[in-house]
Each structure stands twice: as C-alpha cells, then as structure tokens.
Image (cartoon, rainbow, N blue to C red; front, side, top):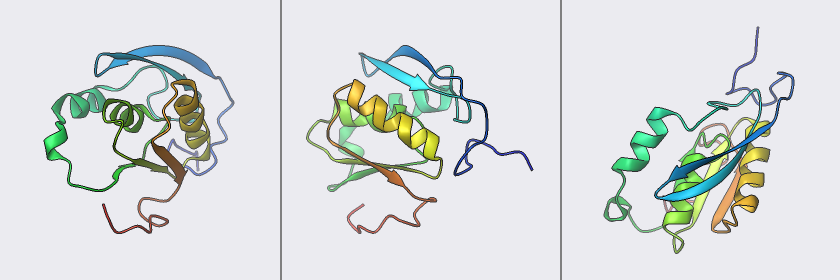
Length: 127
C-alpha cells in the first residue's frame, strides 16, 4: 500500500522547497517537502479557517492544532496571539520536522510541536 501524508514515516523521495505566504497580514516563510499535505501552498481550507477565527472564540488554556502538517495554521495562530501557547501535533514525522524548522525560521517560540496520532499522546486536559 502506498503511503500518504498521514503516514508516520513517508517514503516519498525528498523534494524540499521554500516559499513565502501571507497569513493574518504577516509573511511567513514555509519549508515543505514531498510526503506532506499541501506542499506547494497553504490550502484553501486552512486559509478559510484562519480567516474565520477570532480570539474571543478561544477558551482559556492552550490551543491545539491536530494534524498540523508543516505548521501553517498553528504557526499563524501562535504568531497572531503571542500570549497564547499553541500545541501542534501530527503523526507524520517529516511534517513535524518541517513544522519545527518553520517555527524556528519564523521566530515563533510559543509552540510545542510533537508526535501524536490524533489525541493519542495529548495528555493535558486544559484544551
């Protein structure tokens, strides 16, 4: 069976690329690769979700981005709401490595990025 972007360790041949995309009025530098979702641009669904968010909709506590991929949603939220902690999880190790790289490159520190198959390794109860 072929693997997908929701595979833990995609076997797709690496083809890393970098590009810039504006979210919340800020230009983010994103590094992507084969074997991750929407590697060429921030997908329409993610852009639509971010456009619809308002800080008042977030309850107190951490914010979690499940299936974070290379990080566009979680990193944009963390940048836009710097006083909030954002946990970003994904099953895809390649995507997680890219998310960490993108957080560092965009100087976003209020994130925790770790492996989890949906909520399997999410242990805090304050979401």
